[in-house]
Image (cartoon, rainbow, N blue to C red):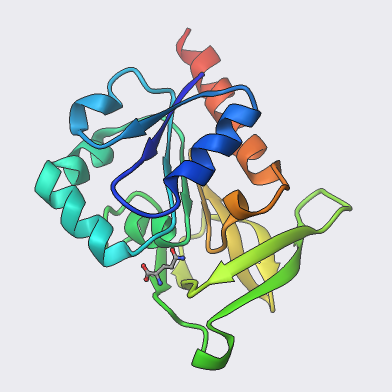
Length: 184
Ligand code: GLN
């Protein structure tokens, strides 16, 4: 499985390292043509305004809109994929929406179908304001969705690449594997 990690800015190295640990061939993506032949794509955390600016500059915004394989977006990646930005996931999110005092925090999350809690690292995280009916909630924090799936797209408001827990990436890679076998 060849999985691209958008490498314009932010936590792309940590995502690539985790994908490699799980046996995927992770490649850094900086140009639209580098999306060709990929089985999946990760849009990492970082700074969403910077991502949008650089993506427009390189034509990656349109190229990612056309990309049809599974996508994992984390933190700023969740913002970039939402209705107000690339429009790939049926969500509206507010940036930096946790108050100043709790701008960054960690919490144990209950993951759908799993007994073992998932440690969520939230760093100036976005907060889901609205979501479409078809969006599935896979984990919540304080009654609000923090890990959701909209068809082939999985987004987390936290940073699964900053812990040793590989379950979010495994979930993404199983969608990648499934989509690849359908295509084959
Ligand atoms: N606060 C950042 C933004 O608005 C997201 C933070 C992150 O990705 N860790 O883009």
